[in-house]
Length: 566
Image (tube, rainbow, N blue to C red; front, side, top):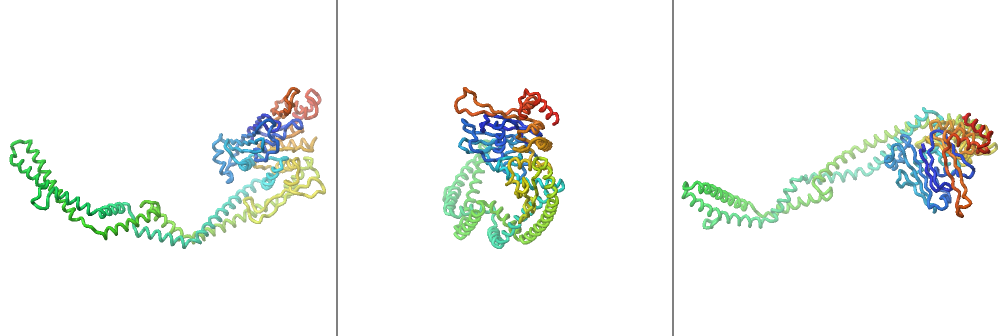
């Protein structure tokens, strides 16, 4: 429902703020005071097109903002997916829609304070408010609401059937997409299997491992520098233990020092300790010299082995370039290829299963659609008769009304047919679609009759503009009673000039226009203000609507009688 409505610089309104309540809200005022400005403000929030010269003279832009209570589940529709996260960031259960209109006619839309499109406002606002009145493009909302009204008239069991059909239809669409995808894959199945087999075989033949790659790189470095390694090993072994006895290596020098230390062994314990360390150095030097000579003996230049290692490392680099750059990524790719190969191998079975599942879903969807259509065909004449009776009570006695069902070529998410409400406002006039032929007041009264009879509407807030056009007396009272009945469990905003309707409202707003004073600057335009009325103010406003002054005792008595009868 609409919690707050703020308006700035819109036509005659400089600044206004409304907080409508539950039930019936009446909006009244003198002709030309600006009542329809409020309707236009709401229309802007619902994605409507701004009329020309909408910005108040002297202002750079007009601004309209509405705070709405979000009904549960209203954001679950797929087309609202982009707005779902944004709306979740605001106050719990509330959403703020806004619209700016520059004096040049450019507009900007906002949802929760962030830029949005007019389509966003239309999609979301259309689920929050149902608008019936003189705004021509609002007639399209009547077209989309027609089927919902007929289904609502059919009853709760029918609505449950409609939900089951919608789920079945969505299932058919999902299975159709899956089947088409499987068919598309089947067309390239052999080619994909060949490619997968090639990649798997290439990786399996290599049999890569991170340990082997590291070992191969070390071996390649050793084979590439074998001559330098031999020279270093030969120099080291000669320096420690020369191959020929006439050499003077480190080991011989250490042995001579050890012999001299042993010659005075026992003379000094400290030297004996040092002699032990010297002996250890001599043994380590002899062992190191022997190890380096053995290493030297094992070093051989092997061009064939170097070529073999180079080729294997090139194979490693080749598969790594193809599949991620590391051995680990190559192994992961091989595993994924095997899984995809297994899936494609079973694709024919999956295709058969998908086709069978879709056929079953199509059959179920068709059965439910037939039941849905039967319920609608049975209810349509009764709904039309009940609406004609209601229209007779709403000053449209001579009107004919019918509910026409037209089959669709293909099932949609709402069933096998579309609904068209046909209206002939007067005798002898051919019936035409309501959304194309009815005037603002007739359209409002037809929708009022429909919702009174069907008792269904997807919106918690209903706005009626011109619903009382051309009516008065007891008819006005009948219109007001139906508006008040619709307000049970909903919020109804009604722009009216009839006291019989205004007296039934639970909340009453008055729009008053003040003309510029004699000393006002030239060119200054009137200002319209919006005021929520208390009991004394309601009496005064009803007196005005009755064509009398508030001081008129008879008019006050009549106004009080209207309120008492409410």
